[in-house]
Length: 164
Image (cartoon, rainbow, N blue to C red; front, side, top):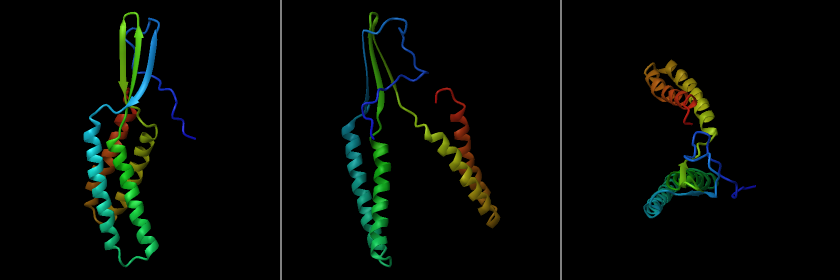
């Protein structure tokens, strides 16, 4: 189910300095390339803040039936913790290689394959929503230019970039 021991391959846009020399020893790792103590403190502080917001949310929703009240707070807490984990626990890929000329290393971050598809569909769906809202009030066209228009431009710049 989970393939934790999959090999990390060097992306095609990265090249070794001495790629024509044979590799004597090489390895790849995934690691956090920043101060983990500060990141963990930030994670704990924000996790406590999200837990407090969940408790406040639970106390505010007194009119809701009990299962939906609890379920909405648990869903909010779980979703926010997932977002927080993805922000505070990012990892980089590192590749090291020994050749006769010396030691080489490369570092890169994997770009998710689903991100471009998500950007394309999300900008299209929000553009449709904003066009509908513009029939109610024409000032929503400004929001349509800023929101979905900006995301569409971001998608186009990432889709046609050689570095992604």
